[in-house]
Image (cartoon, rainbow, N blue to C red; front, top):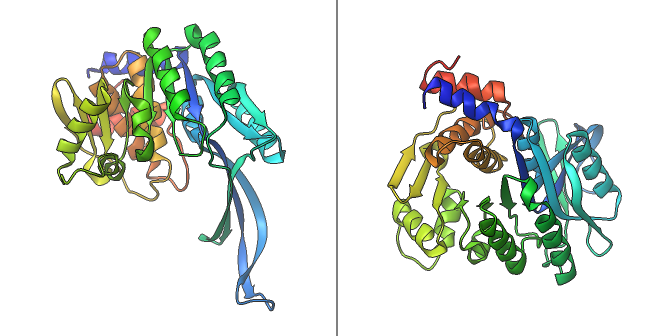
Length: 328
């Protein structure tokens, strides 16, 4: 990519509208200090000093997009509860269109509550219902997306296997996207890959890619990548390979892009950053290979931060400069 092209792609980010469909969660951190053991049981007593809420699951994809100034539409299910209200308030504060989020009295808002003593995670408590949503909720989401399809540039399916992206809903969204010439990308769970036949692209990590072909005896990741792309009839497949970078599988063959990271502190949420920047860059005019390079650059930024993080446009430009040369 020359300098002008790179700048043009990034300058288009805030003109785009992206829909995210999937399992929205609330990550809740209770942070305190431990100075004694409980007299009731041999467990630490944590004196809570701070509580922090972060968008999790599909919400982290939304967080990545909104950080880059993208108009984002969210479709998913939350509970009719206090945690659901916290989640909605957080999204509204980021300018996210939440009209596609359904409040359900039958399911709780998915919450991952972590208790930290100093820098050590002591306990995680989960609230969730992972059963598939019923047909009536599927119908509402399909109807909402269908009514908005002409306003969006791409759809991201963020699957955490928590029941929103059912086989029927996933297939209907892909069919709708293809009919309207919209990009549709998937961050999949291996157990659900047959839901995503015909998508534009998928972005599994290396472990997930092998699990997608769990009945295969091959230990060659490139062979796995080619097979997944062929079986699912994808335009291309992007496999993230941790310290080995990313590999793109398309009609031109295999393109490997080495990883770049100043220092790795935490890989939490890096996959969300990859699919966000990959989809966004392609929608902004990049080729899939150029989009992979930009996504890989952004991932190198977020793994250098603690916890679920995002990359700003300025950080992407600065780090891209370090890797590939100066971009004015």
